[in-house]
Length: 85
Image (cartoon, rainbow, N blue to C red; front, side, top):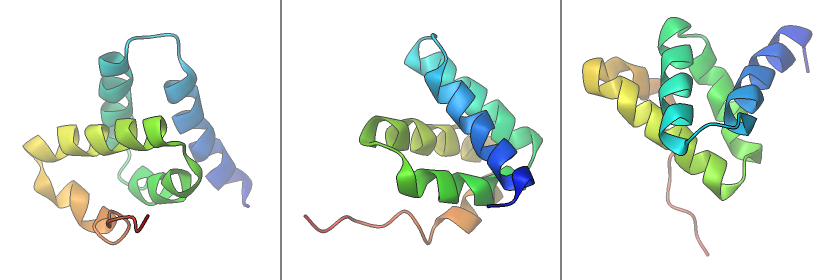
């Protein structure tokens, strides 16, 4: 994995591991994603290895930023699919 990609994934890890309330994590993650559109693709990579709680936070952050600008969700639509259990 390229160092730049690892650094971006570390941003997600830092936010999700922060000792703050869940709503604050969602807000921080949404702000980070909105500030750098390239991170949306990295979120997909992160999402694949995230636990259920982290996936929920990631999806909530995406929902938050798409309220103001729906185009943010377009790159993510392919990975948000039902899970067959």
